[in-house]
Image (cartoon, rainbow, N blue to C red; front, side, top):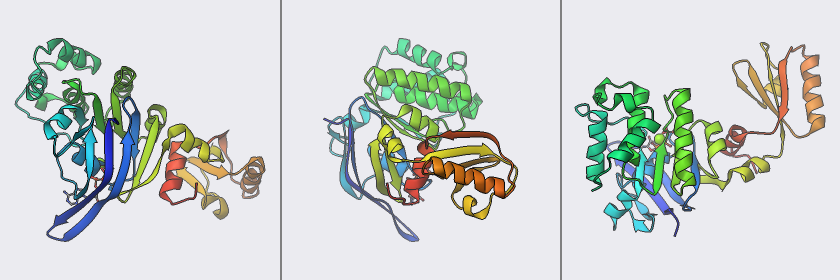
Length: 302
Ligand SMILES: Nc1ncnc2c1ncn2[C@@H]1O[C@H](COP(=O)(O)OP(=O)(O)OP(=O)(O)O)[C@@H](O)[C@H]1O
Ligand SMILES: [Mg+2]
C-alpha cells in the first residue's frame, strides 16, 4: 500500500469569471517512508493538490488515498494519517503556543501528549515561547508552530507546503534535521518548495508539475544524471556576448552556462576572452536540480 496515491486527479475551479482547470489528470504514488518533493512554478497546482489530499477541497474527478483511506469516503481516517503544514499562516490569536498544540491534539483525540509537545517545542526552538500568545510571535515563529501543530498527533504522512518560506537559516537547518530524523524513523514526507537546493538535498524522488500536469517524475539522482552537460559558473560585472547570453542563467553577477563537453568549455571561455569580458571565481561542475527544473519547465527534451 502506498502512503499516498493520486489517481487521475482533476480540479476545475468555477467562479464568477468562468472556470479554470488547475489540475489536468495527475497520477502518482508516494511510497511509505519516502521523502518526496513536489516542485513547480507559482500556480502549477501544488497547493491545490495538497488541499485535495487534506480534504479541504474536492477533486472534480479522480481519487486520492492516504495510507489506503479514501480522502472522501474515509475522510476522518485519511485526515488522521496526515500532518499538514499549510502554505498560508493561519492561527488563532487568542491561544498560547502550548494551548494551540493541546487543542490540536484534542482534535485528533490524542491524550497524554505533553512529553511529545515538549519535545516538539524544544526541537523547533519554541520552548521559551510556549506560553506566549500566537499574536506575539514573529512570522517565522508562527511557521514553526504550524509545523509543531502538524506533528502533534504523530501522523505517518507529513505534508509540508513551502515550510521554509520566510524562515531563517538556523531554523531551516534544525527543521530539516528534525524532519529528516522522523523520515528515517519511518514517516513519509511530501514537500513542496521553491528552494531547489533543499529539494535536491532532501528528496529521494521528485515530481514536477507544470500548469496542472505532471511533467517529470523520477528519482532525484536519475533526474540529475539525465541532464548530461557541464556547467560553467563564474562572476562578472560585464554584459555577455549575445550568443552566450542566450543560453546563460544570470543571477546578479553570477553567470551559469551550460556546455556539452570540454570543447564547449574552451569555446565559451574563448568567446568571453574575445568579447573582453573579465570573469572571476570560475568553477566547472555538474548541473544542479535548478538547471534540471529550468530545462523541464522550458520543455527541453530529456
Ligand atoms: N479558490 C480558487 N479559485 C480559483 N482559482 C484558484 C483557486 N485556488 C487556486 N486557484 C488557481 O489554481 C492555480 C493553481 O494554484 P495553486 O495554489 O495550486 O498553485 P501552487 O503550485 O501552489 O503555486 P505557488 O507556488 O504559488 O504556491 C492557480 O492558477 C490559481 O490561481
Ligand atoms: Mg502553493
